[in-house]
Amino acid sequence: MDGHPSAVLTPAILAEGWSLDVSGSDAIAAYVAGYEVWALLQEIEPGHLHERGFHPTAIWGAFAAAAACARLNRLTVEQTRNAIAIVASLAAGVVANFGTMTKPLHVGRTAQAGVLAARLAKSGFTGSPDALEHTAGFMRAHSPSGTPEVDRGNWQLGREWRLSKYGINIKRYPMCYATHRSIDAMLDLVHDRDLAPDAIGEVHVCIGNTQSVMLRNHDPKTALEAKFSLEFAMASAMVARRVGLAELDDAFVRRTDVIENMRKVRCTTTDETLPDMPFAPKDKLSIVLKSGETITHPPVARPKGSWQKPLSDDELRDKFIDCATIGLGQQGADAAFRHMNGDRAPRKPTGPDAGRAGLIRAPRI
Image (cartoon, rainbow, N blue to C red; front, top):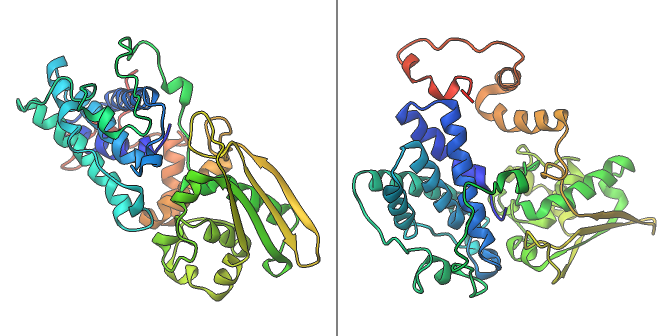
């Protein structure tokens, strides 16, 4: 999957699901509907949106969110068709805005677009039934390849399940996904060899051309810029021995030792790509120590947290705690993690919102 399905689908489903008081199973069904539409549209486009400057999450995500919200609202076939047509004129987002506040705005506006399209269609608003496949429709207008397979005919949507095939990749680090394989390699070497930053002379990384386009910030000054900087990713792994939300802080990015280690990074690229992603088949990393020794990590094809290389229970907990502590505190985050993993029975909702407990009930599957 070329993009971040959950970043769009989850907030759209939680917001619209809450307003409609749906069950947990309805929320899951909406997620699947959105995912399948996203996967289908990507499947019939042989090119990669990144290559044309489009942010895939903001493009495919709009259709996914519209499909999910159509499912939540129990729209008819005609209404759902209209929701998809409406959202075809709401999808937008360019890669050039990566590393700024506008990049996450893409995701928020995309979720909003899905909610809006479904609600408009429900109220009788219309769009072209061929907004996707028309010669002047969405797929051809946005196609990097110029040859989207819009005339294939048999989409098998709802018959051949793409979710079980492509799965969900969990981002272990709060950085652009294009950095994750290199971060895995760097952290492995740092911890296995107990490397101090002062012992490292140069870091050599080979990634794909499209990855390089996304990782455009070579001398970041802010945390937002640092998210799209391979140099920062490597420096954080060297200096902090981790790459988490605590490191995505303006003060940390501007630290003298972080800047010094960013300057050690040398990046080369390759034209080769994976069949399912516009990334190099493997990221390659080697470290030249000041002693003259060169340490090379085996090429990394899949990052930890990917569908093919899932996080361990401890790694998944660390990821959750890193995210949730900001809003819930350490104890609250730990309690939430245990709660969602079934370590204690859920409390019965009380208070004025007790009737809106649909999304926290156990799914009726």
